[in-house]
Length: 203
Image 1 (cartoon, one colour):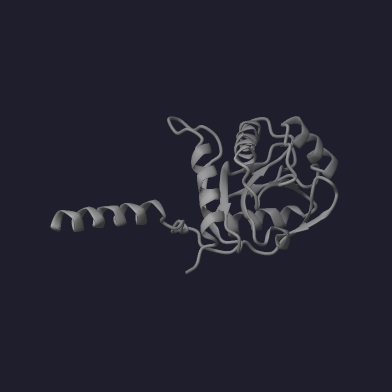
Image 2 (cartoon, helix red, strand yellow):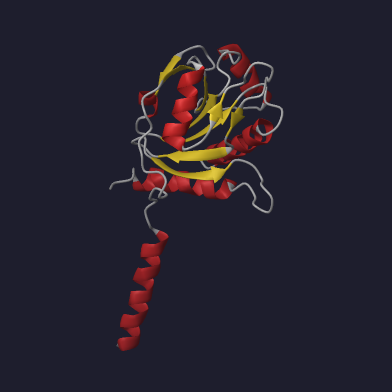
């Protein structure tokens, strides 16, 4: 009898561990501030369009010569896996850190170049440089510095960010291989699925 009770306790413990709710990392837990932008189709897009969806955000620009190509390629792999598994109610937003030059047409061409084959992935522009700089810092604790005179390359973080259905920033991931750390595609996909299944974070 004691052995049976012990085994039941182990089973319940493992079940609790396997169904643990995703909680924000210590540096996050904030809600993404309101934003109004223009997507790659030239349509107005706001944070309200993501209400009820689990989404992933990153920062890129189309003229990027270094980190953006591998980041965007990796994002396509995440999207491919989510689509393959039939995941619904998710979204991807890539914010341009070069809004002066990244017109909707350029963003559209950029997304097509990487084969973004889903309506769930939107690319943002249409705001000013001051906005994107503050937006990145205040919401995602990252730099998002547009190009300056004499330098056509922006400076920005390379992380991907997980946001729940209420707009709460949950955690970040490396957006490309770094040293001995490999891009965690599987972890991202599983976290998106977990949030969709369990619902938004509740304090």
